Length: 228
Image 1 (cartoon, rainbow, N blue to C red):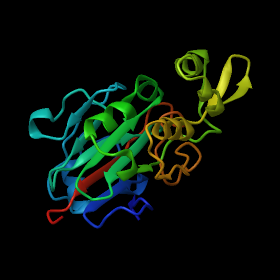
Image 2 (image 1 turned 180 degrees about the horizontal axis):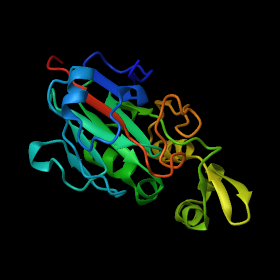
Image 3 (image 1 turned 60 degrees about the horizontal axis):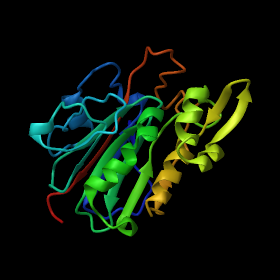
Image 4 (image 1 turned 135 degrees about the vertical axis):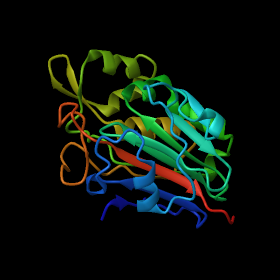
């Protein structure tokens, strides 16, 4: 196995995958041919230049390689993609199978509203959206400091629920819960996945923290079939 597929009730027109270590993407910055061969892509992905922002762009050739941390499309055979190795990838589709999006959400992007910006850009009724939370660092391994804690709690007090006190001035943060809370606040309740840990599942996933920055990346991709 070189990839996993979301366990979610997406319509048949939606194709979604996340690669694992066995895919051996390793350090290739833009592994177009490897991904195309592995997943039978309808076209090369529309890459974005991920910088931990809240910027979302439409997945078009004009926007390829622009600084952004999320992309969306309503066009068939257009591949949205994000790369991660501890940060949280979110794949999104609507129930009608006519629109998809991919988000790269580290703590900075989450705090700055990358999820909210993406949902706004998709302009879909929240009850029509399905979200899959892909492999990210788990809540027992993501130690953060006061800067991260306050980045969330200062704006939304309920975010405290996603932080477990660890050592003086340190917390264990739950990226999955932080994302779910933001999605719920937008009226999105159909959320799937969120049961991985890139740090501890070293046989499956790359981890930036575990491997001290010297690591490959997982690719999370989503697109629409030509017929829908």
